[in-house]
Amino acid sequence: KNQVEQSPQSLIILEGKNCTLQCNYTVSPFSNLRWYKQDTGRGPVSLTIMTFSENTKSNGRYTATLDADTKQSSLHITASQLSDSASYICVVSDRGSTLGRLYFGRGTQLTVWP
Amino acid sequence: EADIYQTPRYLVIGTGKKITLECSQTMGHDKMYWYQQDPGMELHLIHYSYGVNSTEKGDLSSESTVSRIRTEHFPLTLESARPSHTSQYLCASSASDRGPAETQYFGPGTRLLVL
Image (tube, rainbow over all chains, first blue to last red; front, side, top):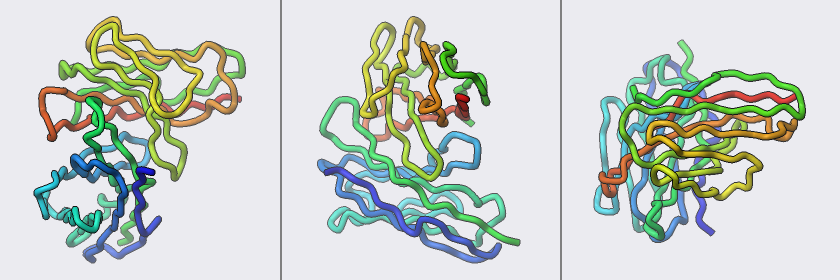
């Protein structure tokens, strides 16, 4: 069964600290993996996208890694800011159909305290 | 900021009413999607469209219907709302000519409460 599991479910950190969010998936065949940020009451916004051959991708203070062999990804946030408080969703796309089916994790709810 | 819009943003309605959730995008994307999301849960695809006059049901069974008469417009309709329809509905669009880099852009969502 194609699944995407994220951990931790929720995380609280102090402003300025770093954190790492985890994503494990069983989606096959694999096409790409995205991390989205979803602010409360808003739609998700894409942060990074990685294909099979990419190990790491950065977007400002966000750095995503991918290990396609172990089917694991992480999102590292450096020097956190209050505006980083949001849900971070891992999304994996398969190659099994022309639609490019997306599998969504439940997200990690990050809260950054001053 | 993606150019995809949803109205209304919030809707409280009584059981049995007919409702239409509006979604429009100005990016010229050929693909559009509707997702349902409950608090703390993953997004579930309920409808999608490859282009004008093309609509398909997604993975999550839904009593809603959709139409795609214009490229930029993808409304979702519930003929008779029930409390079980209470949820957040997210509309998204993407361009199919981007290959593996194809990214879905999401609207702000409509929070529906059926009493």
